Length: 236
Image (cartoon, rainbow, N blue to C red; front, top):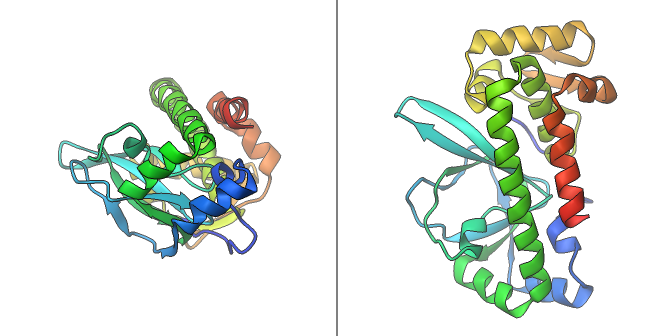
C-alpha cells in the first residue's frame, strides 16, 4: 500500500492544461471526493460509471490472470485520469481499478464526462493525448516485464509511485509489490535489499523511504525516463 501525501497544493495536470474558463466549467460538473485505500472503482467486465481526475490520490489498473495471479498494467494519478475507456465510447472496464493511494479526486459521471469532451475541445485534446501516453507506457511496460531485471523494475515502480504520491516515504509491503510486478516475493526481497544496501532506499516495518532520488533513477531501467519523455512530449 502506498499512502498519498497531503494534497492541499496538488492539482491535476490534465485539468491544469485547460484555460481558466474551461477548467472552471468542467470542475463545476465534477464532485470532489476522498478516495480510500483499497476502494474498488470498477471490476473487469463491469460498467465504468464515473471518470476520476486524481489530485493527491492514485489508482492502480490491475489485470487478474487465471483466477490466482494479478498484475498491475498502469497507474493513474495527478498526471492524468481514470476512465479513458469512456472517452473511447466503451462503458465496460477491461481491468480492476483499485485505489492504492488514498486522497482527493474530482469525480464526474460517465454521461457528464462524455458531454464535457464534446463541449470542450481542449479537454478532448488533452484526454486524447493522455490515451496516447497510456498506450505508449503499456507498450514500454510489456517490454520491461520481459527483458529487464527485477531490481530495475522495482526502482522504476518506486519512482512512479513517488511521483504520484508526491512523497518520498510511503507504506508498502514486499508481498504487495510482488503482486504488482508479477514476480515472486523472494525476488522483490532480494531487489529491495540490493537497493537498500546501496543506500538508495530505506525500509523499516513496511515504511519505505527514497533516500537518494538521483541514485534510484540511475538504478531504474530506461523505461522510467522513457515514460517521462513520452508524457512531456505529448502533454508538456
